[in-house]
Length: 303
Image 1 (spheres, one colour):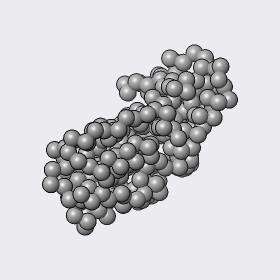
Image 2 (cartoon, rainbow, N blue to C red):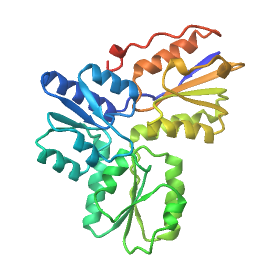
Image 3 (cartoon, helix red, strand yellow):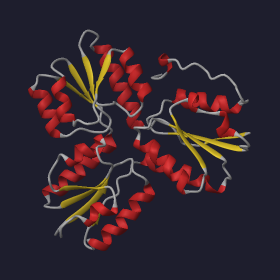
Image 4 (cartoon, helix red, strand yellow):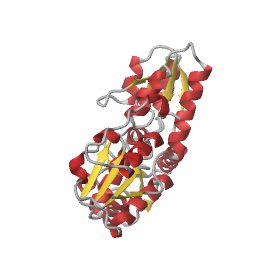
């Protein structure tokens, strides 16, 4: 069985930066309660490893960041790589919390662009995923920011005079273009600013390029809450790879998935620890049915 290691894969600069910030905060404040407002990055293993450093997530998928702040009364709060709204920062400071911002620079750049266009009087059509923290932060800026996830969302909008269009940084490059075309038809004078980050773009393109390589099975190593990991799996399916599996780690690989597989490819989301992907690759390169899976050590996750 041939194993294709898709390049690039794994951590992007925003994730690396967020993890370094969290580790530094723990080192500098060993006696202060430290909380993360949500998931620092969308990977459960990273969050488990942070708990070993006494950094604790405050997360509830049914609550906004503003609501989650009600559960933190003291200490340090780390804002995640997905960005944060000014209202959340202001509330945290009013509560007397020490704020540490681990927002990805690419996400901050998109927020700044949106705020500038709002000041110019535009309505902003923001293509993103409902309830995703990156989208939540942008939507909280103004009632003139409209979330567009599907064509149906576009159909509900009223006539708008000045329209500016941008997007969540981890969306599919292919889905974005389809929605851009639909928006152009409805608002011919709309101004577009495509903001998919470069790390997302090149990882998605690398997966799309697998379509001509006769891949039997593709494993995307990534958390189910990771939008960029889910998009990689979606793109692979759209390109005709029949067996695509989004897996947390090596333990999710099943013998029946590999029956008669000649070429198996591996990629991983931008928030997936290299350690987890390396375990998957090593297991597949020496694969035999019934082979024992390696133990996962939390101590290796943040290294």
